[in-house]
Length: 322
Image (cartoon, rainbow, N blue to C red; front, top):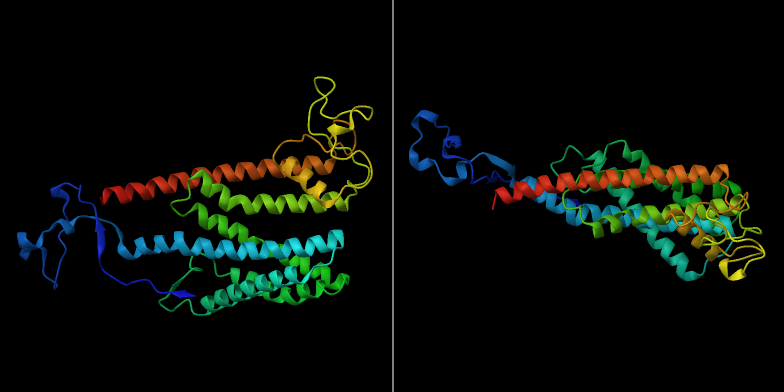
């Protein structure tokens, strides 16, 4: 878990600097007056960044972000499992239980490694947690404390197990903020494919959270849902007398898969309203979620632009060394 970077005095230089800007590298404590022309070489240019910094950036891109993403995925799977059980009351088979146990192992390893790093931060070792703040150790301690509560939720429906488990697992989602902060400050994150792969977890979490909200407020009872414009220039919902093919469901209780489809379309902007209080009205909860989605889009655009800037700066420094 601990990564020790090579300690070296080598530096990467800019070969395009003018000769008048050469910096003479002193060796053996000699003064600048006694330095001969033979000691001035092409490696006497002003350094851009050290070799150690270069390898740190490489490890950050290839290992740090991947490991943190894996831990977030493990946390998300557990979040889905617990909230789905609390919302729909479904039991889990042995396969899902084993997947959850594997996720718990990842979280335990991650938490223990981070705590050890905080205790040994004076040691000359660089780890995947070097970009994180020291206060995050409390976040990992909360992760360890939450595990007994979360495992108890798979075998009992006691509220004094379910509520702490859900609260602590939501607190652990602060790591998504730490992950995004680390990602947007790392070069090489500009591509659209990278953006969607890295931020996909945010969309999934929001869709699942919205689905649980719909169930909690009773939107799945007798809700009529349509995905096209029909009568009138401003009507987004079909009337009751129109063709039932326009609806996912016209009566009864929505299935969980229907609720997920509704949440997914709502997040992606396909719906202006769920029609909970009328044909084209939005209730307070829907308006609040629209505002949250708007802020999420702004945040994603900011992260993309910031990653673009950092990536360009990094590439410029690399090209100057070519």
